[in-house]
Image 1 (cartoon, helix red, strand yellow):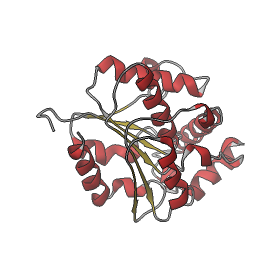
Image 2 (spheres, one colour):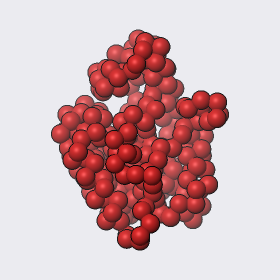
Image 3 (cartoon, one colour):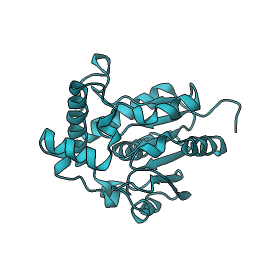
Length: 231
């Protein structure tokens, strides 16, 4: 590996502002950063996207603007599909990616978006609590909880536009990872990511649920080893 630390780009899950990656970003240092979904982080990030493709374009532009040298892309849940689509778009533009980590997300061919997740605010909140209790438990106020729920509904409605069948796959390695108690994923569901790359595929399972495993020391050590071991 070169003396310059490889950049690691994180793609948050539905409704998330990146809190699931806070410890990982801190541990990996200044070369690790979060993409900003349109409209997610205030006026400077524009208005919310009206399509899944618009989200992908925005993420691709952020990476292209930084002229990164074969970054590692790490997406969680909704973010895994955005990251995968971003890799495809970067490939088309001739920009290389060293690897894709798809966390807490079954392969695109197994993607299903629950009607509860995109329904009324109360339905969506109940859905989030059932699949990832930490998503709303850490909200500092009721107003912020409402923002998370509303944002998650918007993200998941856009995710329904993602057409896995239109993808030709990616050329970089895909490393799929999940929490053993995650109700949204399975080993077989993650295993099908192998069909979406002509590169190396691997599957890793950590103790934990949908997102809390990302905050574990074991996951941090694994991500650092992955990043440092890439060609």
